Structure formats: C-alpha cells, structure tokens
Image (tube, rainbow, N blue to C red):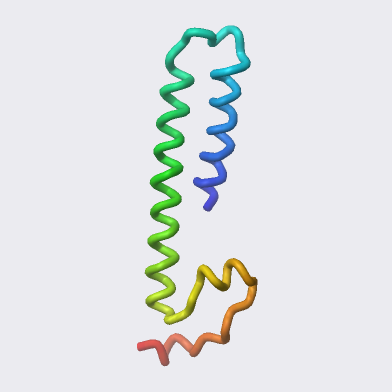
Length: 82
C-alpha cells in the first residue's frame, strides 16, 4: 500500500516535471521515468487485487465488500480454519 501511494506521488511529480519545468523541456528522461512508474503502479495494483481475492478465498470472506462497506463478519478462530 505504501509503495502504491509513493508511486502515485511520484507519478504526479514526474508529470509536473514533464509539463511545467522549462529546464527539462525536450529532455526524454522525465517521460521515460513517468512511463516506468505508471507501469510499476499498474503491476502493484494488479498484485493488490490478486492478493485480495486470494485472501478472500483463504478466509472464506468477501474482503472487497468489507472494504467498501466497512463491515466485516466475525471470523472463526485460526485453529478452526484448518
């Protein structure tokens, strides 16, 4: 989660550098860095979604619904999960 938030902040920073900083006008590295961060963020989001689904299956609980509603059913103790 921290990596995703950092990537979002860096994405905004590199986007600003590409468009607004005159000293970097015509330089390719801010765009390349922006592209790498965007692709990394997409990979992190995909990994996060897969982890949420796998954890939902493992716990037998609908975690994405719990994230939306803020309510979660009471889970059995870990020794009962098997």
